Picture 1 (cartoon, rainbow, N blue to C red):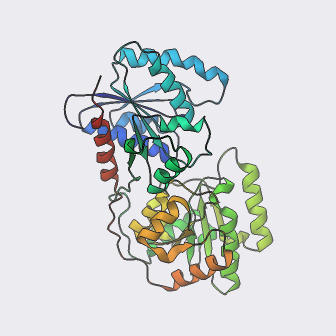
Picture 2 (cartoon, rainbow, N blue to C red; picture 1 turned 90 degrees about the vertical axis):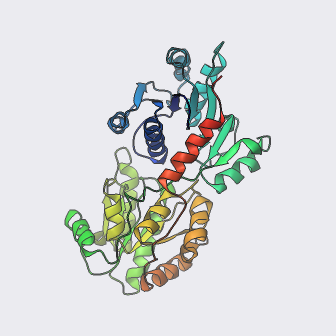
Picture 3 (tube, helix red, strand yellow; picture 1 turned 60 degrees about the vertical axis):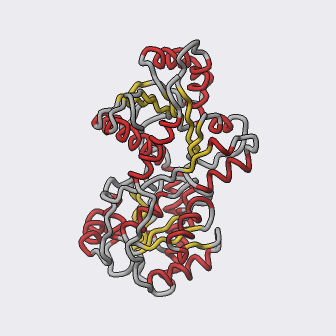
Amino acid sequence: MAGARRTVVQLLPALDAGGVERSTLEIADALVRAGHRAIVVSAGGGLVPRLTAVGAEHVTLDIGRKSPLTVRHIPALRRLFERERVDLVHARSRLPAWIGWRAIRGMRANAPRWVTSVHGLNSPSRYSAIMTSGERVICVSQTVHDYVLEHYPRTNADKLRVIPRGVDVAAFPYRTWPDRDARRRAATLHPALDGDGPLLLLPGRGTRLKGHADALTLLAGLRADGRDARLWMPGSRVEDRERYLDELQAIAERLGIAEVVAFTPPTLAIADAYAASDLVLQLSRKPEAFGRTVLEALATGRSVVGWDHGGVGELLRRYDPRGAVPPFDGTLLERTAHALLDAPPPRPVTMPHTLRAMQEATLAVYAELEPR
């Protein structure tokens, strides 16, 4: 986005861990490095220090709380847009988008340009339709693009822009297999992973949608076939999800695999976790909008097996179709896992889905909309 310095505001519920939050930080960083002013409005969270460290600003407003009281933030947001002479607003989540849209509609002059991103395959509704209201609508995959046109047919296709999420190739360099040092570090942290057999990795937050139970069933099948396989699930242990974790641990006990599974909090060293593993799992029960895990694992040089639907299926079919399994076919999942564990790891993948490409494409979309 060349030209005069512009002020861009991004709206989202909070700045904690997650794909939307990471994308917000990545675009804020790109804006600052390009000489622009980047402001993020959210309820705050653990990523705020990382945001301010790149030179962006944070304004605390709880615009993502699902409560009728949230509308009280509309005047404050409007005053922010006017006071800071905001040129463009980019909404990344539904309720913040409604609040931002209402704030802009109430401005008498110099209203900011309006961009939205569709990060998820939310159930079609009038509430979700706000994400198609942007003058430009960024879709994080071709899957999302097609979903928008199918469920919101009145959307002008000319304003849609497909910008896949990107992998920072410097943060996820190719690692030779096996990486015994990485495996040793993982086993030191989590003794359940100590063994000579293959290590399976399923990164994902503690929710049923991520398919943890499918991973446990797969592990039990592999071990029944004679493999000393282990399973690491970083992100499965999180606050406020204790009941779900108890369910997973009960499943592991019933399957007789509790001693070879590590249920852990999210790890900041996720690239090292990929390197330690022999096979990465992406078993989301609900189609993902994108599936950044697939790209990160392949960039690191690890095979991926996953359900062939949504953005995950889109990426697997493009980069490594060996790992694409028809959704919820547990027998074929186990057979595919055996085949990938017996095959050489994938060669280094050259992909256009890089962080830099995503940042440049997003700023190019902003540049399409001149200040009023």
